[in-house]
Each structure stands twice: as structure tokens, then as C-alpha cells.
Amino acid sequence: MGTSKKLSYLLRHSDVPNEQGWIPVEKLVKEFGYTEKNLRQIVSSDVKHRYEFSADFKYVRALYGHSNHVRIKWNAAIPPATLFHGTAKRSIDSILKDGLKGMNRNYVHLSETKEDAIQVGRRHGEPVVLAIDTQKVIDNGGCFYRLPHGIWLTHDVIYDVYPC
Image (cartoon, rainbow, N blue to C red):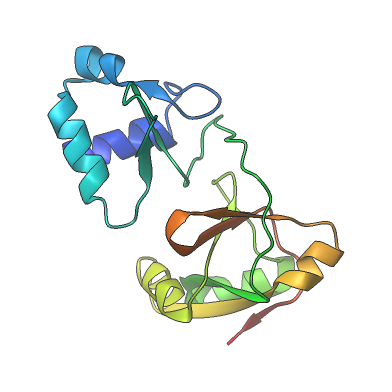
């Protein structure tokens, strides 16, 4: 496993991070064979902007994609009227029947643009983009969290998910 994939696994799927997702850089260096320079390179070159350092560069964490115990405390934000979710064509019937669910992730991941959602969907097969009426989700008790670079998180969406 490459160093970037290994870091992704450690931060998003292992029991190593604390509840807010942080792992000390010192621990990654001593126990997992990284160097500070290597970690800075992985974080700065990640085109999906999945990672961040603490202000003092002593800790690193993944911002999203967790399937572990991590529950980062995000501040709720008002989303655009429509957000998009990219998925594979083979998943559409299930989603339209049961709603959009995080599955093995802590949150459902949404995009601000159809183009970004198409890219996400391609990772899973023939892409299909779903549009989410955010006001209806909010009206039914849902909330949204905005991360940098146009990524939005929410809990399961069972209201007004439709192909676009």
C-alpha cells in the first residue's frame, strides 16, 4: 500500500485518530514510517482536499470519508437550493426506494456542481447524478455541513432525491 493510501486508511477507517479525527504527526513518524516532509507533501498535493493540518502542524486529519468512530464537530451551514450526489447506475433503484444513505461512511457526501458529482459517480461505475432539494431536507429536520472546496456533508436523505 502506498504512503498516501495508507494515510487515507489510517485517518478515515482505523481506530488510531481521536474523536475529532486528529493523529499526532509525531505518532505517524514514529509508528508508521512517515516523515514530516512526506506528510506535508501528501496533504498539499491531494487534489480532493481530504486532509488538513492543525494550525501548529502537530496533528493531521481527514476532513471527510470516515467510516470509523470519528465525529468531527462541523458547524451547520445553509446550502444552495440544490446539491448533487454522484453514484453508479446500479445503485439508483435502491436509492430511489430507500433514500440516499451514508452506507459505511459517517455522512452522505454531496457536491455543489453536477460536474463534480459525475466525477464521484465514475469511481463507482457508470455515473448517475442525483439532485437534492436541500430546503425539503431541512424542512424534514436535516442539516448540512460545508467543507472547503465545494463538499457538503449531511446525514441520510430520504426526501426528494431525484435523477437529473
